[in-house]
Image (cartoon, rainbow, N blue to C red; front, side, top):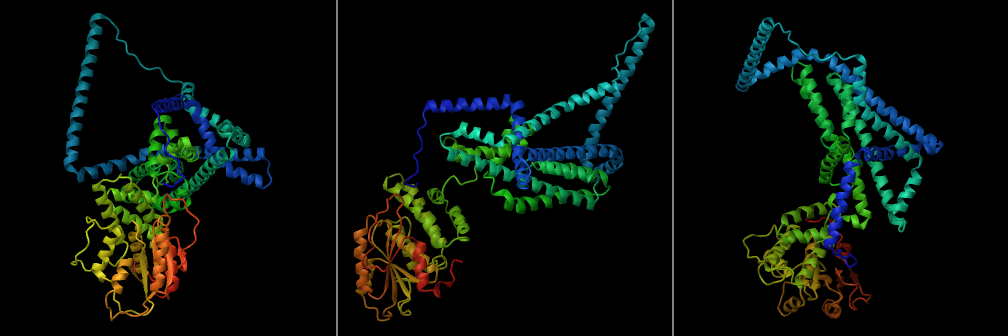
Length: 639
């Protein structure tokens, strides 16, 4: 809603049709060209993973080609080591499976004893199946006797067909054919990876020329952003996965689960699959633990180990290391995993997060793709004032209050009013002046604003509930409603008149449409700092002067704020009010609070002639009061 915000482009029917056709074409190319695109994508992503290693090797004096060769060999050895570990451990576990039959049978009997009803039903079904099997055997015996009688009567010899024995060479051929496709893909990935790393700079230059040669700055920023995010993400994730694998290995060794290297290696690999990968490994390891030990303790310790390690890593380590640097929302990660796994299968599931991150970065830097950043990115779609205004229009004050308390943990109440509350009120003022808010929405908006402002302070919340309170349904302005609610607790003059000399701060509104609300907000900010601030209009001061107040302390006012929420429209009136306040309180420090307007162009004008200082925000005004009352403002009542 800033003045320099670009208007939304007008989307024509022809543009929509072209977008749909282009999207369908891209999806078709991704699906039918997956045999070519998957190896290239894997090579590009692996190049980002080992790029930091190549940079380290080059810093120590090795050449570019030699650094690439060492990095690729290290990656290949790592992959071969993981595959060898998994294969050898699987063979070892397969040899031990017959030993687990007795344990599994014993636990099945235990479960049968624990749930007799269900097991009885299952036994009944099993009995039916056995009867069917017995009938089948009887039929087979009858068929055999019929064959013998047929042979003896017709002198025909029955013929039985048996599958031919498979030779060792055929077994080797079948095994090789089953692993040929993964080996072929791995070879293509390795070759493409080497050439990508060797011509990294040239490829980047060609892509810049192709994607945005006319705007080198924007294209370079986009490419650097994408490469840095992806490289940081891959390296961090690999380090975290390796650390989790080590912890799982040590934990499984301690509790005594066989094949601990297998489960640790699978954990390292499957953690690249978002959300579900590590739990698939945990389930398999738990099943093995149930088959190994006669009791249930090993199974419970195995699942507990995975739960504890994964929760600590997911909730503590990953958010600190790279959780807030990927730029993806959690929902986008889940949707991306579903989409890419549908498109490219298991490989798509593994590469779904980095590919989606590339799309988000492209949407962040390319205006035509900004929809991707809005849908998939972790940046909020609405600014904080827009969210406040939207929730207030819906009457959802509870969510506004919850987000305000989160903000107040880091910043002050005055900063919240400057950053969130005042811009949101100005958005509502603009829509109200244009007749875009109906009566029902006005009631919701007024109620939400009043409840939010009152909830952020303690004065009206802790006041007497039985006293009459101003209604938001009245025709009074919001500032007047909030002020009357305070007065119902503290009295007409918002506090006692017999006070210490120089202890009162007056907040005087100029008289514009939003001035009373801005002045009331300022008074609440100062009172929340334990400063005796009182919100009065010029008419209230005239009425006070016309009445006798023998108990009032002379010279009790030390500061006077003259508040304007629309300085460009109220300059002359503000100058008049400030001069009037100077005549009434000659010894007081007079401060003009000139709040920024949302859509107004700032004008260079001289300050009010009678004021001592000018403040341009609530926080600046609060700091000026704190400087004058350092002892009072030591502790906020809202802290």
